View 1 (tube, rainbow, N blue to C red):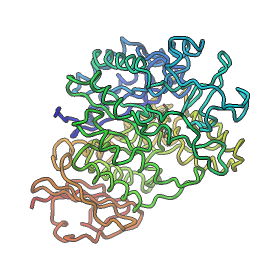
View 2 (view 1 turned 90 degrees about the vertical axis):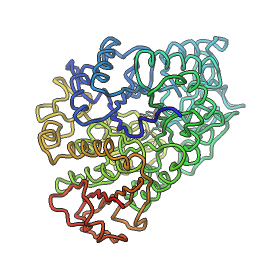
View 3 (view 1 turned 90 degrees about the horizontal axis):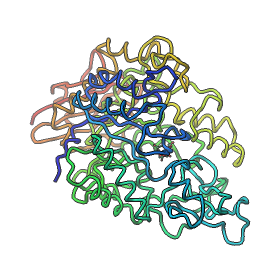
View 4 (view 1 turned 60 degrees about the horizontal axis):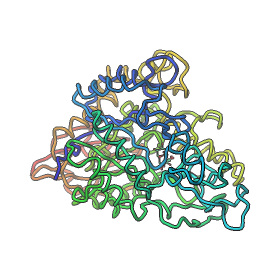
Length: 564
Ligand code: TEU
């Protein structure tokens, strides 16, 4: 078994275009990250994950890559990257890159060649198919399968050069790479080795459970009222997924130590995740599952259903139990695709925001797994007050809005209500550094508006305030570093039927931790076995000035420790 240093680590995700702008063009960059490394060192995180900084037409903010081995001029250059990497390593942190290889940009030279003719040597590097038999190529409904793409519209783009279609599960500017072709895989592995040789410490792998497709590609099940069918049965956890990741391990990671690999896997099940993260199988160290961030959506994509705490606890409980013996969990509330958790599952009103943000952080970080903090989460940043569709920049929001309103005839206000609550731009507004203009993010015009609450919510104010969300996150990270029961303790869910309290214990040897979070604005007594004894235990962490034992104030969190 290799060393599992990442079990006690906390990862911090940076979305570079929204983190800090050093050159005043309104767009975050590598220089901005370098300028703020001390903020991250003070927070105490062990690993930084950078969302894509490679050369890209920026159709999906860099998740469409046209050169995997260069930096986009928006962000800097390779020399600045090396400086950043050195700055990270000097502070005892590691740096992992985003690996986006389910698809490339349509402007990548591989795709430019591939589309040029049917007999180009790179033709088979992507998924080309003729029109549906009997249909006129390029006409509505002639797509090779009936699948919709993640960003609205069909998953196939007609290309006049050769009269065929190419597959794009995301934007038309993100053609899917054909992983069946060994040359594609070798090219990806070579590129990965090049980054590791440069000194990076691993990868977060974008939609890596979509790289193996079920052959032949066939129609998905259509749903009434939807313009396109869901093709996911043909590409989620496909038949060669494990084989490809094992091959990647052998050809890229074997023999290298202190690496971290995390696979982003929408729709992954517990059973599959056990296999993906079983250290003996040599695939990835951990996966990002989605169940807990899909807990507020039902069958109708254009409805937000209020969080039911019992559902959320059921999901986490299942994942904690499933990966208890074999495998490992990643833990996250936020990333660049998710709305801000304090607005989503907490309460972002002035009265409760700080307590709710700390409570949510506490509950998450005390689970078994590796926690991820997304930029601004450590400040309790909130969703943005979007008004109209014109306020959004995200290709997903714009594409889905168009499909829902124009093709599916949904009520635009209903669609907007969901985008306001769940849209990805909520996470992408600029990082709030201080109370100067543009929150200290940029001296130019930010590419996406700054949240107007920055005079109250910003890093400078929080670093100076010992009771801030920032210092609470710092303590959570420190607790993981110092208390082995947080890392290795087993997990037992308590009060599974309670709709307001989230309670569990962690035990390692004779150390036992009790964690309770109040997901409500009510004062609630935690009726657990042993309550009186627990009230005499050591209170390791809380978020209220005058804790009343197990009588939980609104949005309160407690962590107790005892030795038995
Ligand atoms: O996201 C994958 C993914 O499943 C998204 O569709 C996500 O579930 C959705 O956007 C939530 O609203 C990854 C990246 O994280 C995302 O930023 C990219 O747009 C996408 O892949 C394509 O690369």
